[in-house]
Amino acid sequence: MESRRYTSELRDAQAAATRDRILDAVVEVLAEGVDTLSIPSVAERAGVSIGTVYRHFGDKAGLLKALVPHAGKRSGIDVEAIPETLEEVDDVVRKVYHHFENTDDVLRAAFASRIGREARVRGSGERLELMKTTIHNIDPNIPGDQADHLAKLMLILTTSDVYLQWKDRLGMDPEEAANEVMWAIRTVIRGVSQ
Image 1 (tube, rainbow, N blue to C red):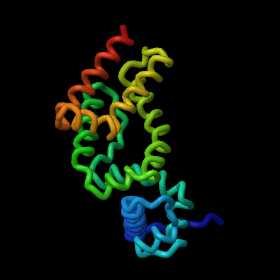
Image 2: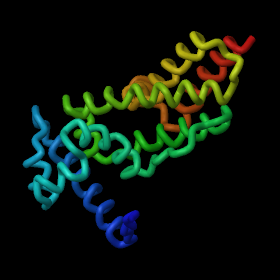
Image 3: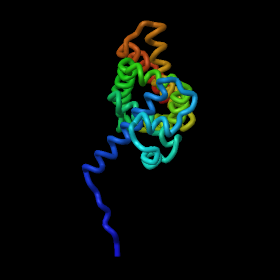
Image 4: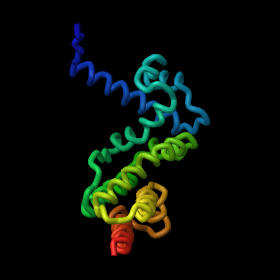
């Protein structure tokens, strides 16, 4: 006999709200500059049991893996579709740079912490694969090694560290910085496509 799976929109919404509350607590804890992230401190800050944190994320690695997408969602940069054209890449770069400009101080402090930087680095592998897929979508004829180089360049150009260089060193706003990044991306793609 096959068992039926019970689903409830209310229960799903409550679980999503709990996950968000836990991840918001991670951001707050990291913003305080802690050297190590502890599940008990996150649970206490979120107002949930330690078991609830483990049930939703498994372990600290699961928490950190969920942190970067949560931060994007929290700040309105929840990019779900992989760009297929340069125009779509342009749109994403502008959204990302505006996101960096509008990131609240708590989130900025969380990602400036050692653990926050580690979380960003852990997410870089997935982002690099998305960039490679984007390059293939834009021009499937770009050779694999060239696409890899271009994907790495795009990854670096769309980091908050690079945005801050455009802003702090050259006084650019998000639109001006995005224009420069897109000029570079278009120029390199034209160069490898010829």
